[in-house]
Amino acid sequence: MTNSGNSRRRFIQHSVGGLVVSASLASPETAAVSADGAVRIANPVSGDVLRTAGRLSADGMHLFEQERPIPVAGKADVLVCGAGPAGVAAALAAARTGVSVQLIEVAGCLGGVWTAGLLTKILDSENKSGIMVELLREFSNRGSEVARQTRGTVYDPEIAKLVLEELCVKAGVRIRLHTRLVGAVTDERNRVVAVLTESRNGREAWQAERFVDCSGDGDLAAHAGCRFDVGVGAECTCQPMSMLALLTGVDPQEIGPYIRESGSAAKSRLLGLMEEHGIAPSYRAPTLRHLHSGIYSLMTNHEYGVSAFDADAITAATLRARREIHEIVDGLRKVGGPWQNLSVVATAEQIGVREGRRIRGRYAITAEDLATGLRHEQAVCTARFPIDVHALAADGNKEVDRNFRENGSKPYNIPYPALVAADVDGLLMAGRCISGDFIAHSSYRVTGNSVPMGEAAGRAAAVSVQQNVMPHELDWNAVKSQ
Image (tube, rainbow, N blue to C red; front, side, top):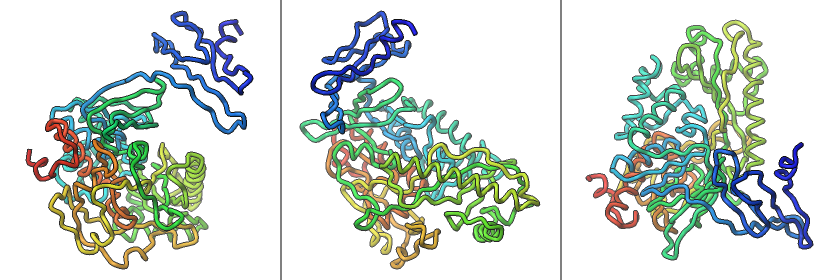
């Protein structure tokens, strides 16, 4: 190893007070970083980074990071955190009003659970208008015969990636992938003014006039100091996570009765086939969908009691889920006949999370609102999906907990104030992190509702910038008429 290489790898130096995290840099453009400062390398293409200095506590349990300058990576009128269905709709709606929009996403593609999560089915989209109709039309027109027959609600994730990218680029949305939000900054007026991210570029700051949290788990709002609720009961029990997969190797004509689009009985038939051959899926309503040619999607996994905020727990759930999918496919292959060549094409990049934070907004949607069929003067859309609480523990029925349906539900409005953060200004939410209770969330969380929520939040964010008012000062009816 060269002296330069040795120098570059001297990461830890001992000191009397503990450990100082520091290093030398091999770049000829800069001097070595010391314990009392950090520098930004002039040529990031070389792979050099903004270095960190810090001190390890005497007990070894904490590292005190030294203050360092964080570069501002971008400024925009509206910044959208999370590029799932809600985030893409928010970015498109804002950009189409003429304001500048920055979209930040942790995955390597747009679409969130639609694409990285391999969802393949959009629920509660049929009665929507606006961007939802536009997306379904594109998914249908560019998709397979199955996509056309289902009017785009059963779609190909790869086509969805391309459609979403093309629409956002055409609208002028600035896209940053592979970037995770790790902090938010508010000013003396309690307005969100910047967010912090980590990526291969290191830690960066992003400024905007308005922010939209479409992270699913309410990450931006939590970092901004907003109050939130999680799950149900004293243990904050959340709905299970699920991993989806793409399969191939079977003829749709030969397994037609097991394909979900043949009718609701397909789930029980597939479960019966599994159990007959000793396969016990963790989700007892297995769903097999035919997407196109010889490609299918499968959802038959539940991961119970996993926190959306615990990386170790999600990692363990991901490993279990992927193993279960392969074991189930191996088991079905052994059934023989039309299943003998069944195989896994891909498992989802990210496990599907049904439930994270529910951010406190200026209106909270409740179970009573669903039971009475809420009609609100500032409705952004109407939700028709039923109460859908998946079993909360492995010792239950491993399907849906119908105890939460006792009071019933009717079509209800999602009000604009439920999208507006209560505890800070300049922040809106869209998707499953909006303001509501546990039961209501189980209905409005599906992606057919996320898109119109995102569209409303993005449009409101843009209009609030143009009118120089805060989002909570807007009336949605005035916004949508512009």
